[in-house]
Length: 261
Ligand SMILES: [Zn+2]
Image (cartoon, rainbow, N blue to C red; front, side):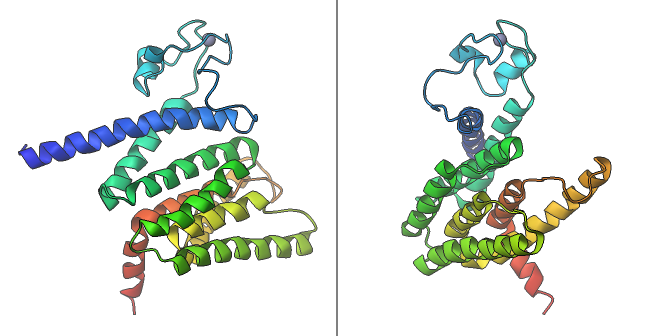
């Protein structure tokens, strides 16, 4: 390996480790925010035996492997989801730095993917998207225009209005037709947040991508669980996946699409 390659590997490795540490904190947020608990205090503890987890038992991914997925004190199985979220956060952080470099705009995209991961798993667990993430998310997205050269005020504010407004209309229409709520207010605020970060031009493609992935996942899920349309699949995770795809590959998808004309 030449020195440039070594530098790159060390840099991306450090970003990955940083991402797993943030992921470890996101696990705490995912567990505590829906319960209305503080994400800072008390220190992490085992939900079964209540014993606090020492720092050396709380090293992302490694501790899980070292303790073979069990609590050090009581031996209860720890969900594989904890190290998986740590690894996912690490991987997405590496992709952010790989795609956007290390620059004044990088922290905004790190916050964006961290917020999307937290929202995805809370929505999967509880079918809610907490305002304490999506509303500050909208604000941070709007503030990013000061640091991101390729997003303007019009893009970002337009993204909030189009993202929020569009899903609001869809939700109202669904309510009128089916007389029950299909899409929650949380999804509306999430799409407004996505619009704030990615701009209004990303809103339609993100909805399209999420619906596509949602259909691909939802139909087999309904088939295997023998549910007929009444199955409540949260839409937030699909919106988040769509947003991440658009963040990293949006411009590639656009140029591929326009190559047909
Ligand atoms: Zn325990």
